[in-house]
Image 1: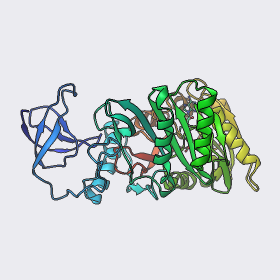
Image 2 (image 1 turned 135 degrees about the horizontal axis):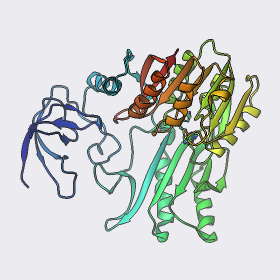
Image 3 (image 1 turned 30 degrees about the vertical axis):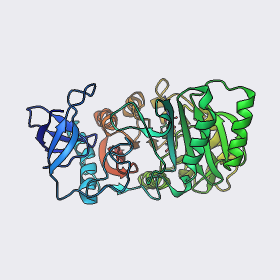
Image 4 (image 1 turned 90 degrees about the vertical axis):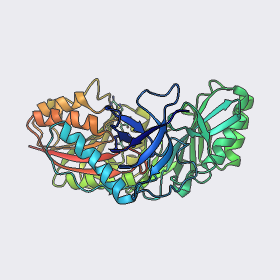
Length: 413
Ligand SMILES: C[S@@+](CC[C@H](N)C(=O)[O-])C[C@H]1O[C@@H](n2cnc3c(N)ncnc32)[C@H](O)[C@@H]1O
């Protein structure tokens, strides 16, 4: 193994240390600014990636990671950096992305939204020469790291790994790689199993027995019901929502509450709000405690769950929820005339087509939520090109220990 000695310049957008010693950027995971490290290149890895072998001069900002799987499991990129430095880096990711896009706006302090931890995780189950492995994808490799605990999960997820392991063991004879998505709800764990292909009645009966033994609220396979013991419900403001299987859910409860509170603050004074990319309604249901709301999302099951929650909740202002593909059929200026404020929270791709319609409308206020600063910046430029001013940006850290950062922003004209 031939070693290279590098000095790390800064931590990059994906959480890896970046060195320019060779005249171009080389990325070394788990390193910090000013560290001198010995690295190696592994066959098959990307040409600009290096593996950390030895830290020759450690940074004074370095701390011991709290998880024994850190560095092996690919779930966390940063546990080895003192919190203040980590927080400053994460906020700067947003500042730099906006600056590169030519957007001028004060960026607020990073708001921590880890709360009690992740209430949803997808475990992967794979069979290999070493037997069955259930866990997360390995850092930088196409392998699964079997884990027996994950400290970033919410305590309500404590039984998740045992249930995922039992499901993987039971489905071992099927011989397929599985993705097992587990969500914590008020009535127990909700699990959706993907990848097994069609199952015969005998296995489905065993799966159903297993769900009962593990006291799951619900077990589905590709969204189809295997066993329902209790409705998998979560509280959203005043409402209770029964989760649609495998629909989007903000990964922490604190994240959902923080994003919703920042959205509601920015909607102050509005009368009729459109919530675009609403999911099962974490913003719409809370907004409807004060405002009239029309909500749209392409996920029909999420819209059904939202409509059911509206019917079962007393005292909300009128809230309509409609399934609609906003990439293909964004709300056009004529439809947008009904609203005095639009909230949008698209998937990672952003909402380019919808942003063009917002820019062409006569709206004076738009509130954007984003999990991807790069696509946010693209959409923000469309809005500012249409005469909006980017008034404020609040970065939110829901995915602590990773390079993912979210934000809430408002646009005014
Ligand atoms: C980041 S999630 C936000 C959901 C919700 N605001 C929340 O906080 O839970 C993005 C949402 O966009 C929806 N979505 C994805 N593609 C879409 C499309 N083409 N048209 C409309 N909605 C879409 C997804 O179903 C998902 O609910």
